[in-house]
Image (cartoon, rainbow, N blue to C red; front, side, top):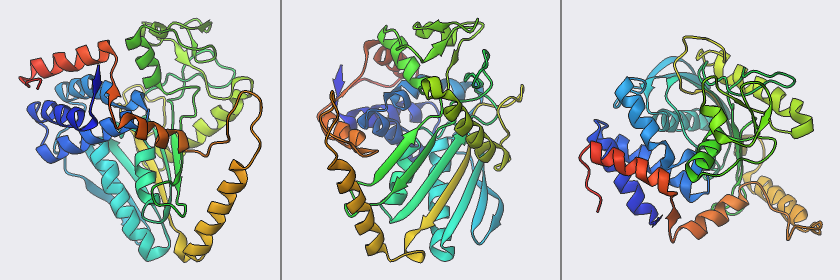
Length: 347
């Protein structure tokens, strides 16, 4: 099926609202999920609706939770999300961090006790549009040990993503790096599963540590695992994953991966830099734009049409998907089941 983004956002909002999520909060979560689909990150899109509803039912996420400030200084804060929706908690972190960065030149906000925050790139893009540099890292709050460490044959890390946003002279075209430190995000394996497709080589190991192209192995009992990114240079992805776990988990107080009784969510580290307090903003964006032009002027190698900048593929995908977002049949079936269960009509 092909759906308009505004239809999907409203449909998902109504499903969340019917399950006890306050209307404004339901709108925020639904919009962030559909936004992820719009940018081509289906792994963080509406495929998560059944997961989120299950988390509400199990008490793993608390609709309407009050976000508290556990610690604070002029340039820092630790937010306690009290297990509210991560999209709401992370949005509050961006607002607080931006205010502190304007006052101090830079700020660091960490997050604990938050459910899944979704696509990290959304938050650093918002900051870049305000002429900040943003760096965001997230672990799985002590859970999610599905990534094999370099040289290991058992899951010990979460996917541990990171994102960086840097403004350019075009407010609508910031440079956005949004990546996991694993070979692939777990949600991309879930998308392959729902589409009935195999996964590429280099993504998965089964529970015995053997390479596999079957997405089912990640959800079996015992579970398989995802490899760190980098292929033969996987030690680089592993090393980055360790650092994300320490900054997102240990520094926030959320905990590093490996605690058996940990609650699934995101521990986060957010660094915000007010560019104008380091260098003239005009000089900065001129330098960035010149650098981008220099990179894109590179003759393409065989098999490529052009050199792309981080975030450029997502912007093009969003423009393409403005006319409609494709949702695989199995994902749509699951969402319709959720709607039916909660008494939401399908328009």
